[in-house]
Image 1 (cartoon, rainbow, N blue to C red):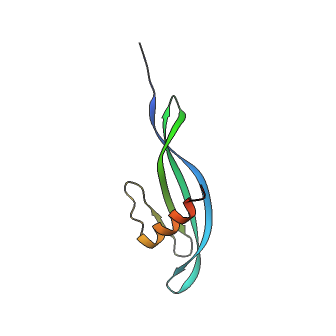
Image 2 (cartoon, rainbow, N blue to C red):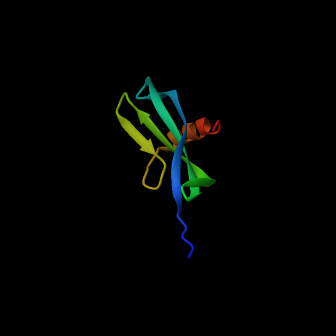
Image 3 (tube, helix red, strand yellow):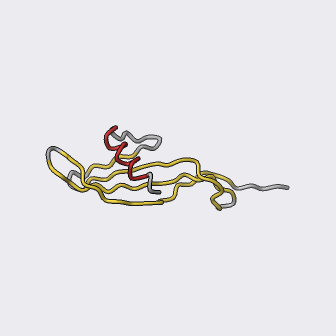
Length: 86
């Protein structure tokens, strides 16, 4: 009998703080980059894609571009720029 355990898991691969314009002010934004992996027996086999999240402490806003996220386009471009390093 064969028994396989497989799934998809996200791992944080990078976190960076950037200055952004928000309502005419320069505020800090914390950008987190996740990589989605296909895993077999809890071992990551190969990467599937990237996912981004952004937290703005000044206004307590949180955005992500995952399945249910709705990140504004200008923030998504900034996240992709940061994600190129990882």
